[in-house]
Image (cartoon, rainbow, N blue to C red; front, side, top):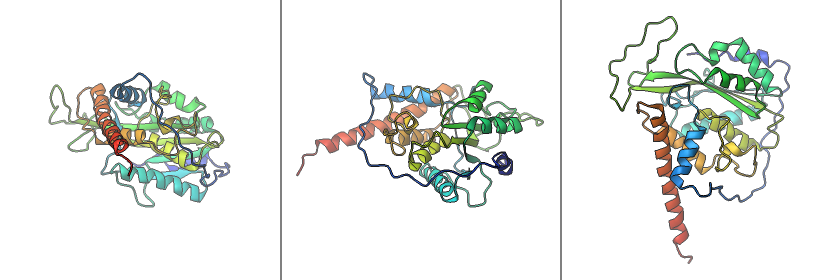
Length: 308
């Protein structure tokens, strides 16, 4: 499926001056992990995953297909900055065992910098509404969420489009407009399903004025985080050590934190074949918990080693 024409987006952006400098040098600072006091680790992880995950209405978490991978397009940044942004997103993709498109590929991840994010978002949705909410089940979040994408004052806003597919064949698992219903040979069991959700497109819009307080590396990692996961922009995550809090506290992280990496690793490492969407989210939380617990044990073991 071809991505929304980049030419259309460039036309919308005509007249905007490229205006984001190269990576800013940020003084090194030691920052202690933020801990949700009084909450056991498992509960911390489950709370975070439940709050932050925002899949298409009625479906479980979607992720990029490792075979099709991603192709990143960055618009309205200076050439070197655009390349650095695309390279960083691609680097995270490779860490998640995703393939990355060659130069000249058709973008399915579009990152746009602008000095008027609400106007740009509204123009894009008005011009191609079906690109943001295709007319099939499992494509996107509710219309109210799309309206918030258009009108919010966030420094970075994002929108994902997904499709339920048959795991074994990769074919659509829902009826597409004008086509016959899909043929699904097996419906799994009471506990499992042969259907999973695959990300098709991601739009990320950066308000360059509001992003001024961050280093370029912080911004690039923030964009990477919301590219690979369907993050709820309204999630209450202030107590967690994640790059998602960097606009409220620029010293919290200078890139993806271990917490972020464990979340993404669990999202892409879980076997999301559970029939109920909440069970799929729970599978992500369980795998993330095991990763965090192992990291804590290793850290404790190092702390217990006597100095020579």
